Length: 445
Ligand SMILES: C[S@@+](CC[C@H](N)C(=O)[O-])C[C@H]1O[C@@H](n2cnc3c(N)ncnc32)[C@H](O)[C@@H]1O
Image (cartoon, rainbow, N blue to C red; front, side, top):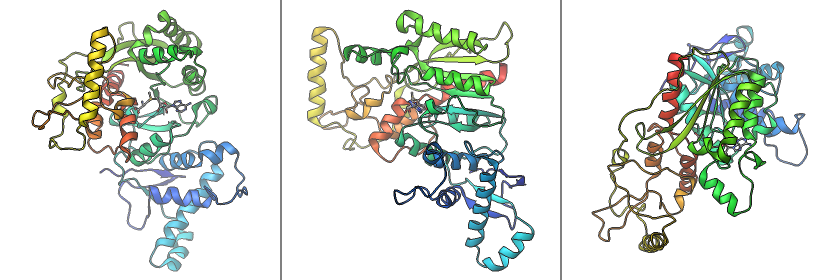
């Protein structure tokens, strides 16, 4: 696992800790900072002088700062960064065998502090080639893709508590919460290369639209809580002026509301932001064995050559069998007889009335259908046939297989709760699709 070089207020911190440097793991460092701030605090008394927002976001602020310590902590000032450096220094010295002699020497010749991220599956890069923001970060599909290309995440935001847990255990960073409260602020002074994210798609997807229609709810931009999030992306772009916007949504985005939604998106990016606008709808199945149709939008701050185009994705659809684990037929991913019979009955009814869902087992030589967040309930969208099962009962995909369907690397650590893991993979993005488009931008953009 690669070690990361970071700078803490000017003191170079070696990739491999230099002899005598003060080494602290990112998790110890994070705990030390939070403890020093009295977070989360025991009683009802406020024993801190932070604003409500800073207090709520303290784990995000501290964990971001540990990854980018040459900037002041987000929402705080340089003095706080210095204070936190002192906290880490004293925590390291306390841990030393002979603290008394160490402290004396340390005061005269401060040693570099080495933050060790090596126990993380995806530590921050040592020598990044570009910076990016990971918005609506989920479990970091964009983050892995952009880190693979040499990017360094300088800001992440995700408000779901469980997704934050998965994010922390994989990247060592707690994403900030509700982006609507932060999107008009200058969050850091560093220049930003890529603003990336899959803004929530429920208000735009076909399934989401029909569910909302039947509930009498608004959809698209009229859905106040979710549809407006595109404008938070725009606000952040206005403040930080990234070189590139890289956005993802459902394929149906271009048709929603007779094309008006997409027109507004395009117009806002071109006219309000002054960026050049490109898009393409892709089926991800030559890259992952899943038919997942996604609209990718790329916008450039600087004008591109007249010949710039979104890349073509060619190649055969991959077979589902290529990502399957070898499981015994009595695996506990096997459906109960009751559930399987229920699927069959409902499918027969739906076939008779010519509409609705039919649950059959998948052809393993074809890609899976689109993985969805509700998959954990009964797996009906993608059931794996088990010919060696005595009652021919099919099984669900495992969490690892779902990770593979979205192209997550094998060392990715899913959420420890099965339900959360399924939901999170269903909401995520095919990592290789993002990498494919981002690589094309890096080469040609
Ligand atoms: C389509 S998912 C994106 C998944 C992500 N691309 C990934 O790779 O896992 C959209 C995410 O936006 C998050 N979200 C929705 N509204 C938000 C808000 N106001 N602030 C921060 N995150 C939000 C949801 O919790 C959800 O995880």
